[in-house]
Structures are given as C-alpha cells and as structure tokens.
Length: 501
Image (cartoon, rainbow, N blue to C red; front, side):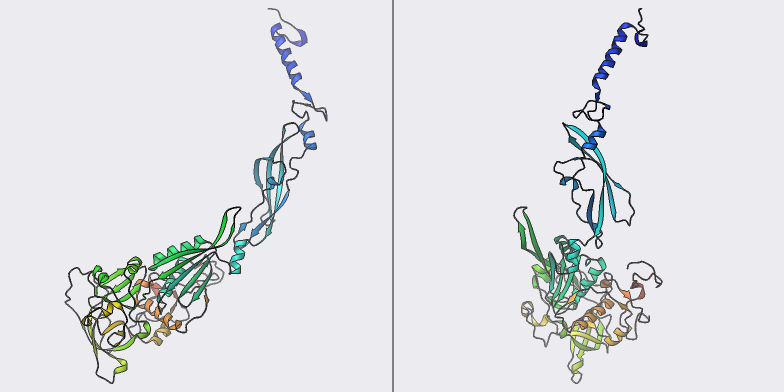
C-alpha cells in the first residue's frame, strides 16, 4: 500500500486528504474579532465576549440598590418592587440567590443572572448583585391596629336580660381559648359587647365560636364603603348581629305546653340551673331535667317570669325528703345531683306574721330548718306571661326556691381566687354591675360544671384556708386553681424567666 510522507503524516493518501479537508473547514469556521483581532467562533456581531461586554451593559437601567420596608410590629417585609420591569427592554432572569450578609447590617444582597439579546441577535449573559437596604416602617395593617379606629367587621353580641351572668361566663371562655387576640377593640355597652376586627374572616371565626359556646342566632349585613370600577374591587364593612337567648342562670321560666310535652311531659314551670351551649332546665316538682338548644328555643320561645332583683329571702321552717316519687308515662331524665324535698318557708320580711308557704324544691340535699334560701314569690307577683295565664292556678306553685343563701361579706373575704378580664372600653355602665359580678363568682363556687370551662387563678394576697367555712358555703379547692404567672417570673416566683401563662 502506498504511503504519503507529506507534512509529516505517515498515512495513506485518501486518509491524508480527509485530514486536510478537516483543517480547512476549521480555519473557515473561525473568525477574527473586529475590535481586538482575537480568533473567535463566528457570531452575529463578530465581536468577542470581552469587547461586547465593554460596549453593551445589559444590566443598565436595573437599580443596583433598592430600599425595602420592614415592619417591626408584625415582622413582615413590605412589597418589593420588581426591578426587572423598570428596564425599557425586558431581560430574561436566569438565576437568583441570596448572598450572605451580617444579620445586623440591614442589608439583603441578591445575586442575579440575566440574559438579553444584543447586536444582531447575539445573546449576552451577565451576573451582578442587587443590594436591598432594609428600612423600618410600620405597615398599613399595624398602623390601623394602633389607631384603634379602623375596622372592617364588627360582631355585636346582645342579650335582652337584666343580668349579665351569661356575658361573664362568655368572657371567661373567650379568654381561655384566646379568641380576643385578633380584635382591634372591644366595647362594652348596656346590653352587650361589640368586637371590632380588621378583616371579615376574623369576625366569622368569632361568630362560629359563639355558636358553639352559647345558644344564639345571628344576622349578617354589609355596607359598601368604596369601589373601583376599573379593577372591579369593592370595600365593605360587615356587621354580625348576635342575639343570645334571653335566659340566664336561676331564672324561672314557663314553657309552652307543646314544648313541655316534647321534653318528657315536664311541668311548665321550670328553673334554669345553667346556660352553656344549651339551656339546662330542671323541674322543681319532679327533678326532671332537659336541655334546650338554640334552634329549639327560637322555634318555641319562652321568657323569664321574674328578674333577679325580685328574689326574696325565705327562712326554712320545715323540710322533708320525698322518698317515693311517682313518675308519669314518658318522663325524661332525672337529676342525680339534686334531692327532691318538701319544705315550709316563711319570708324574713313577714316574721311578725304566721303566713307560711309550702312548695317542692330541688334543693332538698342543702336545706335544713333555719336555713335562709332565695326564691320567687309567684303567689303575690304580677306575672304577665301568655303561658302562665293559660295554666290552671293549681299547677302554678306559690313559691319557687332558687338557691341557698349565705353571708356574702364573709364569702368575699375568704375568696382566695380571682379571674382575668378582657381589656375593653366601658360606656354607660350600670352601678349594679358589681353585684351581678359577685353573683357570677358565687355561681362558679356552687357549680362545678361551669368551673371546668373557666381558668381560675389563685390569689396570693388571700391566705389559704379550709375548703368550706363554718356555714358550709361551697368553695373552690386549690387543686382547681392555676398559678397566675407573669412574663417576668418563673414557676417559683423568681425573676428572669420568660414564660407565658
């Protein structure tokens, strides 16, 4: 086989021609830069990368330093402007990443990689750093919260009663579950509370909470504040009107015949022993109990026959326990916590007379001759109720006993616990609020079922005594109390611990 030694190649002739053609093609594909003469691969601009970057800056017009606001209240950054949209001809963002900076430098550095078409379709890529300067500035939402005069939704809670026991209980539930944290302002008026919120969603959450804790109903309405026809956006103020059933603990009620029959043939005259998510009633003549939810109440409404100020003090002259009780057909559940008793009582204001009243009561386990008890005198009371007016007079008791009476002054002095309160604005308050609040505290001591839903804190200023006093008045044990810890105290009372209660 013939071999060729031209140009130092010891190859066959046909192989040599192939090599020569390849070298010629490589020389043809390489160009010289028109600026510096460096051999480069062909490109539409016929300029090397170094010369092209010296002539064209694709990051021109993109700000290298931008200010960004930071709210110290909510720990949020403000809206960062899009720096790439400030260029007349948009560039293509290829990559972005943060560059580490000192935490206290008030700087945020971002490394950007962008591409742009330049000079006859040539695509140039460039890397540069944008410096964000953090400036403290309160955001609009926090500014409205601090102003305390801006709101977008309000929940108006109302109860048409003369006593606020239900509101005091509702206040403790709100504190226990932290439902007051999103409120802008809480305003207390004569017959209820107003909760103001910065968003409708927070108000709806409060409405759902109230529906789960107390029997109530609500109506929603909204008012148009402003609108933008170009962007089709509207600004509304929403109002939720919540109405709680007008029944409180220790109220005497008269049920409709249809409702009493549906509850197990109860007597129409009943006593409300508790109001939680439902109305808990007890028949003082049979100890039969029933629970009425909000929907049932609004379908068969009934009112309180007497308000708390009409409670009169009686003295027990004679008391006997009813052993054998005949139950009617279809009777409902009987209370195991109460004892049916038959008592003769006399008003303390009529001790100079011999007039006494006979009645049955659910307090047979508490009453003894000589005890004082509070009750309603239905025999001498002018009751304006449609259901009572239709009842036979023989079925209406002369007296309905509500609860045993203790020395209030002594109970207040020995009360070694306290409750927390909501921070709210008080306007046009009644002077009778303190007495009503003391009634609520006494109800907590007497009813263990209500205490389970309330956070009770020990008052360190009051010395610890026995759980019952000389009169046998119920008291809250230390096991049911919580320690009122502050942020500046630890569990042992020392300074310096960061603990939330």
